[in-house]
Length: 304
Image (tube, rainbow, N blue to C red; front, side, top):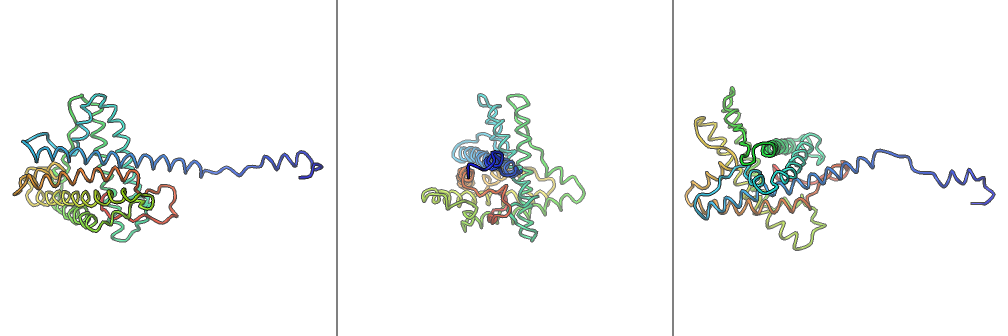
């Protein structure tokens, strides 16, 4: 620039800055939300790991601790500084529930409105509701007496009391068997869940462990979910049947089958594997919260 150019002109050139937009703020919000979602995958892993360990103890020894969807929350709450730990659990559950709502409503993964796409998005909504229930149980433990955990509402009994409740529970049970049960078993058998992970950033050992843990874990969770769906159908056909159509009810039903302890051991190992796989998902799962124009990830499991 010539020295004879007016000073004000040179100054104007040197201090020119790009116009400020909201993209940086949106990107920052997206990164924060992604971190929250990834924490949710860690908490989901714990939600499956602890019941799996307890189920294995029951299968290998005398009758032990009760197992329910809120068992991990209750156990954490009883530990020293348990309520402080549960605050972190609650944050993770909130993040994972929010991810379910985002996937179902805003469709960032671009599943579309085809029958299969709507089924997947419906599965995400169910997942969000389930983890919202666990979040409510966590809040109840944090705010309630130290030694007592919240007991989840038996939504099946409440639904059966409604007009046409048996039909609704039966339809939900059949859909649960086909989607959450058989769908995940097929995904685990084929190994198609690996498409959901950023395998291009994984080492050979990480890919191998993710594939092994994912296959065992997804198949086992699909089998347990199939039993849960069967319990729903049974409750619809026999309204007076006692029992719960949840994780605890499924594990108890497995234990009461011929060779029940062996089957329960296999289910427990599978749940532990799925918990470990879920922790791996916290790092490697493809998550897009701020780039809707990028190619969508291919999610194969019905409820992730």
